[in-house]
Length: 296
Image 1 (cartoon, rainbow, N blue to C red):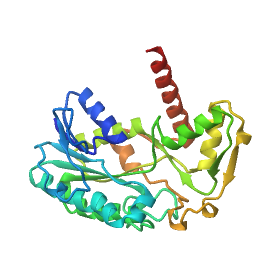
Image 2 (image 1 turned 180 degrees about the horizontal axis):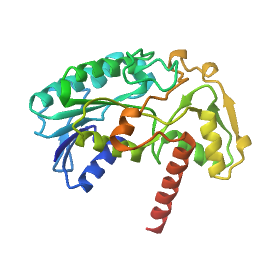
Image 3 (image 1 turned 120 degrees about the horizontal axis):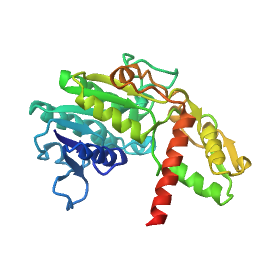
Image 4 (image 1 turned 180 degrees about the vertical axis):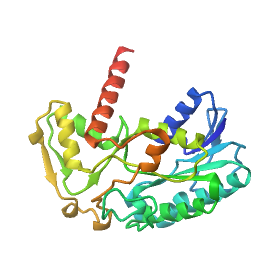
């Protein structure tokens, strides 16, 4: 199978590329580097004025992984956020679909207002942030492409090099105090299970809307306490603080991030996991990678 990953520089794009290549698929991927070092790399900067007309290879499936995901980044530069998260992906998807490719768009639980848990896929989007709005607008464009398009809404995808969690672990190991939000929530899924679901979706005759999240929400304070337990650190080093009292805009505070993932479960057999077990897995993966690096 010939596959294109738009956003090959990102964590999901890199992991997806590795997984597809392990299946002996021919994988093309976009990069913002001006001189790609790989023969199957395609230079593409979604922020550039000519991005929508970039020449792309003929493929069976195209994944749209690239995005500006930061709420603040989209809030502070709405024009750029809308271009990268909506205008250009939509234009490229229309071209690819017209050439016979299936398209898979990675979206977010931010298309909803986080007012209730386990939101069904059929619920109309109700975004509270600019990022969520741009994703919701892109979803509409991809849905209009019909049976060649799949949309995958994700909760927080947790990986072993997550910047926030890595920073916390380093600070806890050095017996430094950290602060974590007690009113801001996540229902994480691991990078590994996300990749497996994306591969399965591209192989399935089914299309349309899919959703993935953890089984329940925990606060970032809960997550930090779990990391303290895993690192044998003093939990008293962690202070619970309110996002609402720390300068986070009210519309960017996540209260419920879980999604109804029943369609993914029916397709793959995967079931949402408890967020603490996801953190445990990612921590073990991080420790394993560190040990392997030290042996080299």
